[in-house]
Each structure stands twice: as structure tokens, then as C-alpha cells.
Image (cartoon, rainbow, N blue to C red; front, side):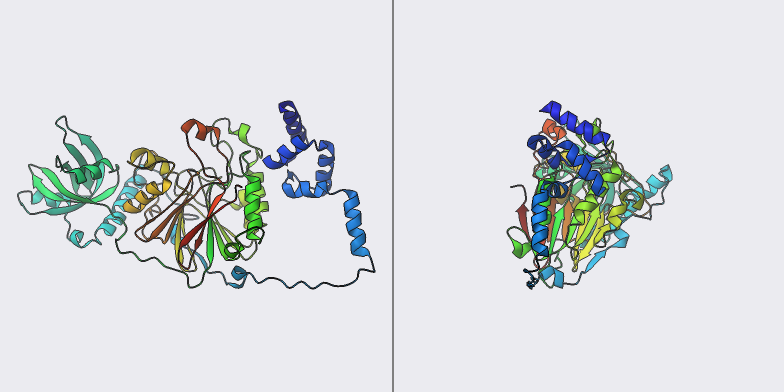
Length: 502
């Protein structure tokens, strides 16, 4: 069987044809005559063998001739009028807005030199400091320089600072080294304070926090530490009618592990086939949070795991699939670390030169990463989630099996890359990674595992994947949850998960 697979792959490659993973297995297992497929593909002028092509190919000439004779029979001239079904979402006017200031596309200006990075950290500090100052007690916070000048005062003081280092002493004391534009200082976490010890353990380098405490011998002794966070009382926006949004990510088109058949079921469902039409008929928007394709050269030996080893054709196949989405549904495509854009974040949108066919679809909108979109007045922050690896690796209680916990930690810190050094960041003049506006829905992907929670009025959703488990994931013990699509009713933000895997 393996020899046959190699022969089929070699022959198709010689003819410049690409076959999807599902069709490849069918051709091999069913013993379909390969030369006939090649001949038919050339006559149709197609380069990609898909389910649709095989369906056409399987129709015998006898079936086609019978169908033609029935259509042409003059005795069968009666006209049947079929009343079209009213679809709720088709009758609703789109209210999609891509928040321009949230997207770096077309606005990247930095050179990546030292001055750019200094400006980036100053901007990050300024943005998050402003958020912390919205708290009543921190409106009158002082600077580190001001703290030192009044070091003899026994009154409590508050500073807003960036964490530069964490360390422990041999006697079991915990220290934070912090800084602001005016200077640096060491913060002592009192021994025996369990609450502050837990905060200390979960504090990341480079995050911006507010600290309350008292000075003693040139050391600031902390009594409280706060994060920018989402206000306790935060009321989300709701749509005025029951329009729905489908959240997807990590399609990985081009990989032999792309679940083409399952994605096909999703597309069919959007067109009214299958169960739960009460939901599918209300879908007005689809938001895809990156890794649209598997890409080229993303990891060593990737070419061995690709059925479409051409980046242009990967996006062309994606466009072919998305052309089956009903035209009244708006599709927003954001970028991920596998897409053909820069790997450093924030990421600009895909260029038309690479993803041309996508730009020709009138209901498809290509954006950068991250991006905030408004659908019927409900704001969704879309972020692929590359820095989730750093968050999960450095925070207590965060795991790949429950990505929603790490996503909540983003919201607490109001930043999508709170820790610098492990992820590629472009030091743009405007910090696109600060969560300035609180979203109603926070949507990520990247880890290939679905996750759902709610944090202070924000719906937190990781939409999983349409790719089967990779060898790399097996090695790490990751368990993906493919083909499970979360659907959000924008009228009440209730989530329904539809499984297209069965």
C-alpha cells in the first residue's frame, strides 16, 4: 500500500497536479484509474484534485446521458416553481466594522533599532500606567524618584512600575526589581503574606503593575500589588437581534493533516445542510484567528507533511473553499505564525501578491494580527495567540489543555505580550498589543484546543483547529480538539459548540 501511495504521489507531481489529503486516500484505497483522473483534470484545466472534482469524475457517462435526456424530453415540459426558504441572516444587513487603529497593516514604520525598543517600552508603560490610574487609589500615585525623596515618611505610597527582575534571598525573602521613567527601586514581598507571595510567583518580567507600600532603608515594602486588569463592573455590548458569529482558527490548509472532509461538513452546514439549522441560518459573520494555511519552511522537514508544497496554491485552495460560504456571510481572516507574513508581532495583513484569490471574494476581509472587529456593535478582539506558549510556560495553573486560563491572564495584564524576550516583537511607535479597549469577546487560536470562560463580562474563547494531531504535538503530549466550532449569539453572547468531527 505504501508503495502504491508513493507511485500515485510521484505521478501526480510529474503532471503538476496537487491532491487534497482526503482525495489522495480515496484514490489509493478505491483503486481509481490514475491516468483517467489526470486526463479529466487537464481537460477541465484544474491543478487541485478536490472532493468536488472526484464527485464529477465518478459520474458515469451513462448517468450524464440519462440526465441530459430527461432534461431534454419535450414531454416533460412542466415547470416546477420552488419557493425559496427565507434565511434569517440573509435578510439582515451587515454591520461589520474592522477597527482600523487596532491593525498594523500599512502602518508599520519602525526600523527595529535600539531607540525604537526604548520608545516601545516607554509607550507600553505609558499605556498601562494610564489604565492603572483609572483606579481611585492610584490617581495620585508617585514616581520612584518621588518615593525616594519622601523615604522618611511612614505613610503608604503607591507607584506604577515595570518589573525588571524577580529574585529570592537565601533567607527566603522575595524581591522585585522595578523601574519607571524616573528611576529604579527594589520591592520586598513580606515573608508570610501568602496572598502577595502568590502574586509574586505569577508576576512576569516586563509587566506593568501598581504597588502600594512603605519605604524602609531604601527598600519599598509591598502591602498590595495590582494589575491593569478589567474593571470589576464591566457591562458587555449586545446586538439588538439574534445574529450569530462563528469563530475559527488554525485551518492549516496545505497540511496533509488538514481535516478537509470535516471542514466540508462545516461549509455544507452553513448552506443549510445537516442539523441545527436554527443556528446556521442566523450566522452572519465568520472570524478566523490566524494560521489560515500551513505555510512553507515553518519548521524542519515540514515539506514531508505538506500535500500542497506551494504557498500560493495553499491560499488559492483556501479561497476555493471559502467561495462556498454563502455570500451574505462576512468572513474576516486574521494572520498567524504559519501565514506568509512576518513572524514578529504585530503582524500586517497578507499581501495581495501572495493571497490574491482571497481578495477577489467580495465577502472576505483580510486583516493583520491582532485586530479588533465590531459585528452588530459587539467588539471581538482577535489574536492568534503565539505568545500563549510563553504565558503557559511561565504562569501557574496555565496549561495547553485549558488555554482560556492563559487568555484570562492577558486580560488581567491588558497586554498580549506582557513578557518580553521569548517572542518576536516589532517595536512599533504605536503599541498594537496593549488591550486599550475592553472587548466583549476575546478570541484566540494557536494551541489547537478549544477553551471557554467568562472574565468580568468578557467572553473568552479559543476556537481550536481544523488540523489533526501533528507528530510534534504527540511528542509534547498535546491533545487537540479539532473540528469543534464555537458559535456566539450576539444578542446574548451565549455560546453553542457544533462538532463537525463525527
